[in-house]
Figure 1: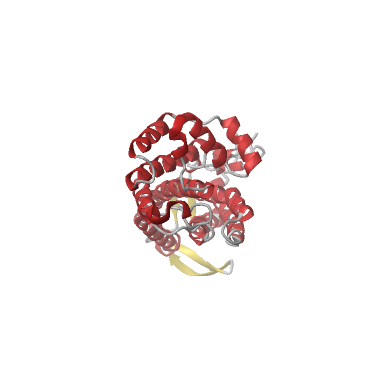
Figure 2 (figure 1 turned 90 degrees about the horizontal axis):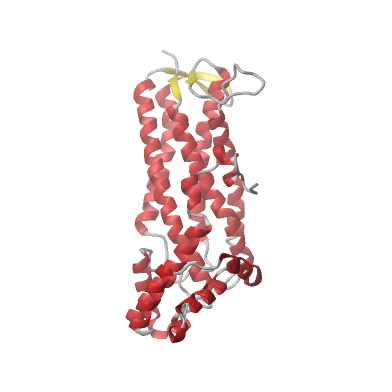
Length: 351
């Protein structure tokens, strides 16, 4: 049994999203952390921080290494972070004099935050494509039914007639804005985190800038000064997830209300009832509302995590680990469900 509905054995069938969730599994995190250590060694080898031949051997070892997971779990319980134990195991695997050249000048937060940036880049790319697909689906719906009539409602009361196109525009236009922002973030590239013990890269001295630039280039991230206690970038990404799910919650709420009133929408494949065989419940529409509200609540916690005291916070950082994966998966599930729901609208509006 799972704690989270997103990977629950059966609740995940409605609320989960396998593609998005895969980027937050332990294996994906470890691969990204090892990519950081490989890129760091190669960059430091080119900059002359460590011998170039040692850098190549360390990089080669990263392709063969996989950590002892029980050891990592014990290490996190002891140290509060996974990297201390991971680096210990890496150095053991590298062995000999080369081991001392692993993880030079870096700190745990560099590895963990950069791993997150690499995985969030993939999540944003996935969600960006789903936004495009969903906007296209709304366009097709508009082409099929846009000229038909709907009763417009204000403050839950019948107002004046509108067209189906008017309603679809209120569903689709926000998604196009979200897609533009997602593309803007991807085009600018998410930032590398590399600051060392207290953000000053003190161990690398005058070679710090060159190592950071090389590391960013290896990983395909933006070369920026360290931001380990400045968490606004993460809140920006989390807010995008919440706004996407919120916009789709509006779509779900509208569909649920249309289904309640009857006559203006026809859906295929609705949810069945164990007690009333005649019912076709708008399950996906309801789930969209729930996911929107869920993400709205999680955003409060992400704003709390902005309060990162001094040069590093253990408490605020840990709070992000609890919140951000759920925000991303809820957004992914919303996009999946909305696309499915649009495809089940057989008729919308009246002639």
